[in-house]
Every structure is written in C-alpha cells, then in structure tokens.
Image: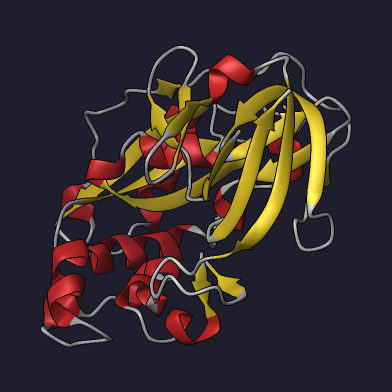
Length: 264
C-alpha cells in the first residue's frame, strides 16, 4: 500500500521508457506493475503550491493559487506571451527569467498526427515522452521562450499543435516523414527565427513505451466521479496508465490528488 500526492511521473529515456511515480518518502517503479491488479483510492486534495486540502482547479493548483503562482502564468501554455526578455514581470520576474531566458526548442512530434510544440532544451526528450510521441525531430533552437512561442504560432497555421490523446492511446499513428515535414515548414518561420533553423540536424528520436496491450476504445478515469478504481495495468504511455478494460488514467491531469495505491 502506498499513499501520496500525485505529480507527473518521472521518466528515463530507455527502451522501453521507465516510469516512476514519486511520493514524498517513497516511489513506485510503474513498469514493475504491468499485468498486475492495481487499486486507486481517492483520499483528499493537496494543492501543489499552498499544500492545503482544497479542490484542484487546474495543473495541480487550487483556484486561488492557479491565478497567483508564477508556476501557472499564461506564458506557460502560451509561450508567445513571454516577456522576461523585455525585463517585464508577469507574476515573478526572477522566476520568469530563470524559466524563459534559456534555450528552447520548437519541434515536430508524432503521437497521433504530427504536431508542433515548444519545450525547454533541458526537457528533451522528457517533453516528448510526456506527450506519448513515438517520434520527434527538432526544428529550431532559440535563446528564449518568446522566440519559440512566435515560431509555434506561425507553424500551427500549417499543422496542429494538439495531441489527440484517444488516438495516441489506441496507437493510431499517421505515416509521416518528419524530415520532409520539417523541410516543408522552413518557409513559414518568422524572420527573427530563421537564423536558428537546425538545417543540418535531421536526427529523428524514436521512443518505445511499456505497453502490453493497446485498447480499442478508451474511457477516462475521473477520481471525483469514481473515487475507487481497480484494474489490471496493461501499459503506460505519455502520462497515462492503461488498464485492461480500456480505462485510462492521466496521472499528470490528476496532480494534487492524494491517493492510496494498492498492488493486489
């Protein structure tokens, strides 16, 4: 029996990916639970910022913290809103400089369809693993988050910037040549970003996930509606646990929930 606050699973870029659910004083190597019966029981909430037992609003934060903490600024989901390079504060300039003023990569990833995305260079390949991507390629590497954001805005006029999580979890993959897609997008880069285009780096990253069986259809587990759930773990992909009856559980989508986990 384990108890702890859910945060997104830690990963190791191995073949297949290793997943770890980390609690304050313990951790679970989730790959070892494949083909075992696992029971989740909701206990309470714990906001990742104030640590109070308050209903989670978004991203693991209670409602008041979501609108106050620097870790939930609009620039996180919309990097084109970054302003630290202008020395302008959103919520906490020191934090924003630390996060925004470092190398960022705009990439193409294949998880269902091919999508464009942004991540800090230090988060490669973790970001792709969290999205359940099977393949990924870097397009540009820029010195701050703002330049990455305006690149993503320009490129998403020509392809999606979203992952179809249902297709990703049923392993429904498009047959896409990422190098050809990268070359196609070169003409659509903002002028300020063109010097950062990685024209000589055509490396394709390939990611393998610990999945014994993909479901034909998926249904999402909601701990608020179903506070207890038990099923046989059949796979882990992205930040999702996949169970034998097609139920999937998004660990990252339930950050801030305190749960009991029983391995039966």
